[in-house]
Image (cartoon, rainbow, N blue to C red; front, side, top):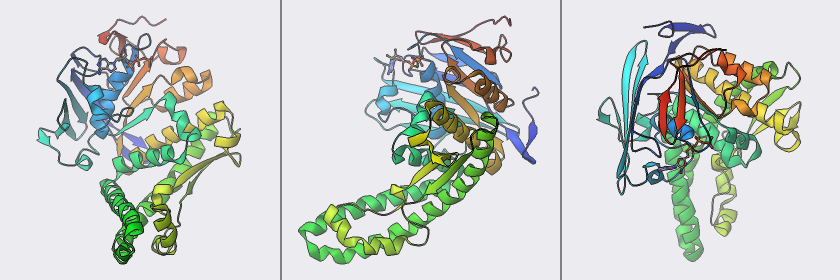
Length: 382
Ligand SMILES: Nc1ncnc2c1ncn2[C@@H]1O[C@H](COP(=O)(O)OP(=O)(O)OP(=O)(O)O)[C@@H](O)[C@H]1O
């Protein structure tokens, strides 16, 4: 088709270029019914605030992850006054073509199909479309509580490793049972005898999660450090450290040792559901000691590292979603980001067109978003 539709060398490994060939949308948020053919490279969506730019990225993200990146209530995604939403993506890579269909209906469970076959579990969707999303909320990855960082880890690992997704699901299911039982034991102490069954199951799944997170973060640490080095011209050295609540191999014992306390509190105090990650810049926790700019750069390095990790692990390049991130960055970082995403399909949103993107634009890849209407527009390079 064109230059993009090819394999290219990345980190000495062949990498398959994957892109979204067609997007079909109906009844999604405020977006008007849409059938578009994006460019396999950069696609820029510009418009004023609250016009539907993020909504468009959300529809693509939903097809990759089977959920929204910003709303737990999927009913909210259905356009006001409509009974249902439909998103369809046609994907192309050099060795396969796939179709993803998402149907959201009021009062019904969501339906997702890959190549016309309904999936039974979300894990069956992962790996169809790899994606990395950048957004201004990425700052919360650094600034907020550990839950945000665990979510980052889990989302990434689930995309890369279906087994991890199933282990995680099982882990949280067992954890819920164990926590319910802990509360019951306070009323009926004789039930304490049944706790060990849940403990061994929890430890088994938990150890797998700890091991996968530890491997993933060791690699992320290396790559993110290189990105940060390039982004800051060597000024800031980044380390990404896994802070497991419990070291690998020790979970069963820790569960047993804290049984009394768990019963007292009615919840499980040990396990990977309490893990955290620490980002150190020049040896100090950037959450506590970093400037806003350093925190933003750290989050950017982590996202850029995610791209490399997906390519390394899967041999495919992800589709990138960049929600209004350029305006938050200085010129150097904007340029670095744009150069880093060259050769991949990217959907960028913005309110104004930054200089750093102008050279990538042409008549085919610039879209205006106004009141939910997305229109292609001729773009004159200055
Ligand atoms: N279910 C829905 N049905 C119809 N409209 C909706 C629905 N959910 C949200 N909206 C509308 O979508 C608009 C917000 O769109 P979006 O979040 O994509 O904005 P945006 O263009 O990214 O703006 P910004 O630059 O401010 O982030 C709001 O006007 C909101 O009322």
